[in-house]
Length: 309
Image (cartoon, rainbow, N blue to C red):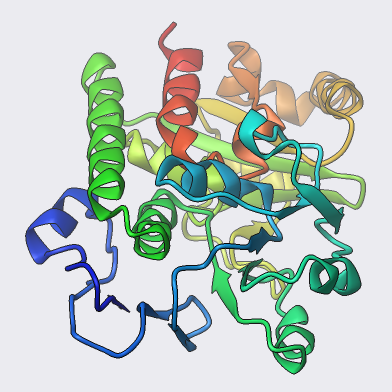
């Protein structure tokens, strides 16, 4: 929920454009510039429009700038940084954010990546710095946070236009491909091993948006990762998916070589339709490991075109 005294925020009608379960954001007269309930359930009241913003995830940059925001600090990252934010001060790698570097930038708001950087909240508060915890994984997350960022910048109309255009672009992709129920599996490869991605993962979310069936949908999730299930070659062979997507964390070329060797050397894998028909596709990390943010339509298009070139 977002409230702002200066400008009436997103109405119920405009939020209908965003869809996908985005929470209602209502206008109200309060004594502050904006009052926001973040993704940790905290109510954050901002007395004035934030002028010095620091983000702990590069995924927040493009959506924030798209609605008129800018940052003074950002993480060091392997993912693409939009040109407008390249000159911003760096605050350390996303997994090792340096609180002292943030404090030295004297921000009036720090936007924190949910599930990764919440440990910063207490230190920032002790130094009089407000924070918002944001999750930006699924497409619904992205649209919700565009609304939050638009409330911070006072550019609600731009936020509504952006989400409406994203919806239209994705609808156009879906309309351009056959409406058939592809059975897909998504294997995630890291240096620690393999897992199977569920609907809550980025690739799983996009496959679901395209109307395809994830063969792992009913598998129990890992204890520490609700978006993934344990890898089992026997289970995947029995599920016999039409298509296999591979996402990865690490050196993509090495992971691809390792996966192809695994498929090639196992008689069991050779019985799977996706392997037998050469329908194994490796998904780029910049779209399917890191949140594509406002590039979600491009990620949807990318996956669709792999199957329907």
